[in-house]
Every structure is written in C-alpha cells, then in structure tokens.
Length: 456
Image 1 (cartoon, rainbow, N blue to C red):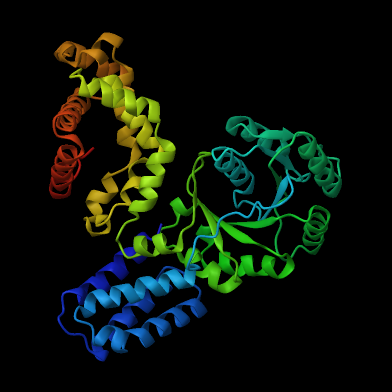
Image 2 (cartoon, rainbow, N blue to C red; image 1 turned 90 degrees about the horizontal axis):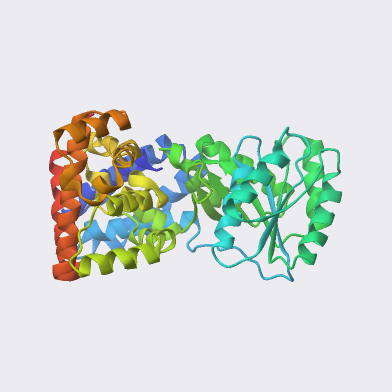
C-alpha cells in the first residue's frame, strides 16, 4: 500500500532536505510534484486541494523558511498535515455498553465484509473478549455457512440463522442469545448492498434501529480509490456510521482511499485489512501511516506486531537453548520462518522498516513470501535427524531433499547457506546479547541492499 505515493513523495521531499536554504519558489515546485503524486494515488480532488494548501501555508511561513534545518522542517509539516487529513489520532473501538456491545457491519457487495467480521472477532478475542457473531445476510448463497466456518476458525461463538428468516428478527434473536451466553461483543454481519439500492438501504436502517449498536462500521474495498470515499460518504449520510474499515490494502499500491475517507466522510478509519488470513487486520494509526507514506517506516507497529504474533514460549525456549550453547538447528529455523509469515510475511515487515522505500525496485520486488514457503518446503522434506544435524546433508541427501520438495539442489544449498548465517546470528546473540545480534543483522541488511536477493 502507498508504494507509488511513497516513492514520489519521499523523493520530492528528500530532495529538499539537504538544502541549507529554501525559497518560496522551490517549495512551490515541490508542492506541484506533491499534488501530482496525490492525484496519481487516486486521492479525492477536494482532499488534494485542501492538503496542498495547508502544507503551502505552513511551508512558506516562518516555520520552514526561517528554520535552521528547512528541509527537515518541511518534512515535519508534510507529515503533520498527512496525519491531520487521516484523523490525527487512532480511533479505537468503543465497547462501553451494557454487554453485549453490538457492532453492526455494513458494506458493499464484494468488499470482504464477512471475512472482516471474522478478523474483527479474532482481534477482540485476542484481547480477552468473549465474541459472538451472526449473519443477517439472507440473500447471498452460503453467506451464513461462510460465517459459521470462519467463526469456528477464530474461536468466536456462532449464532445460527436461516435464509428464510427476516434480518431484523435474526438480529433481535441474536442479541437475546448473546445476552444468555454472557458475551462481551456481538458482531452482526449484513447483506452487501449499494448506496442506490433503496430497499436494501431501508433494511439496514431498520436493523440499526432494532439493534441500536455501539459501533456501526462501514467496510470498503480500498482498491476502488476515491470511489471508496464517495461510497462511504453515501452510507454515512444514510447511517450514523462510527468508523470505516479499509480492506484489500495489500493489493492497493496507490493508497488514495486511506487519505480520502476521513476527510470526505468525517468518520475515522479504524482498521486496515491486508490479506485473506483471519489475523490480517491492524488498527489504523494516522500518525504512523503518515511516516510510512514518507518512507520513514512504522517501527511502533512492527514492535506491536512482533509482540502479538510471536509465540513467547517458543522464543523463550530458543533463547535459553542458545544461551546454554546448544545448536540452533533447522527445526528452529522453520519455526522462525513460520512466525515471520504470521507477522504478515516479508513484504509486510519490510514496509514498516525505515528506509526501505529507498531500495531499488528490483530488490523490493524480489522480497516476497514465495521464497519463505520454498524454504519451509525444503526443510519439511528432510528427516528429523537431518533437521537436528544439518552437517549430515551431503550431496546425495541434498539431491533427495530437492526432489522431495520439488526444488533444485541449488535451492537446498542456498537454504543451508542462509541457515549458517542465522546460526551465526544466534551465536552473536548468545555471546553479545542484543547489541551483538543487532550488529550482525545490520551487516546482513547492508549486504542485501547491495547485492539483492538471488535470482530465481
């Protein structure tokens, strides 16, 4: 997300960073490029005009021109205004209601609403909430069965409904059932609709009146660009929305919707959905997103992701094992790769690291999860003894592992080389603690930036 915008904006702003003095003329020139970059990112025109004007007013004032470091001052202005457009502060869910707190989900057809219901349920369950879900979508074939399957995957309670039932009756019965089960939260899925479908809009208004939800969230596909903001506004005019969830942000390189929705609708973005997995939902932080747009990374979100998605017990056991001088083996490597995928994969991790936007496109395009899955397949084709004792992997064994994993011997050799590097890294950690590990990782990242990943 934001790949194109990040590249254009970071290049434009960084060009001015090293200058000891800025003038109104070169600021105006930079703002013209910012304007083009925003329009190419499919940001709504009113948002572009307002954002550029606000940056201009602050940039040509004393805040920037009179600063000792004008380039850095300009970056701060751009970051602050991007943050302001997207909502200034993180808008968390409001669940301050007599249980069950009801969350009503509305959205267009095909926006990924039912999947988002499951993702939100998982997000709340991880925060020690008892969650139940119900489908009031009596129109789409298998919609109820889909939600039941997803609820089972994330551990949410599922309240049955039938295609022949009335949506309002389903909703009222679900509230009663959630109350009996002493659920903290009830999430109500609804049928996909369009803003011009008067009958369906009337139905969701009836649902809202019957439920009186504490949260009414609009789920919208970010890949529709500024149309996402316009559609969200149409729903906001019809319903008292409390927030927006942008889906499919992993497939949107432009990011215009995230910059437009808050400004156009007046409703905050509360979550971003990236990918099909049920844990692919992250809270939306405007300030962190602004730094990501400018290529500064998002280290805070990365740290939170690591804390939430890594297995603390496994990490503690691995640290204790290495500290005792025991060997880091291929089973340990496979666990680390698996946890990396759970945190959003290589691409998801990289976009949160500062400076990644400055890497060549060729390098960034080669950083993907296919290589991680290939490595895990290779390790999976080894015997238990080989995983514990990698030195056993001679030429004939490597050829057998390659055949079993559908790869080439060169792939197995590359994996073992990467394993050796990880083993050394863990040795650094055992001998020098975190500082030693960070020095080793820094060298590895520099090497990757200089050489790129091996071609496939």
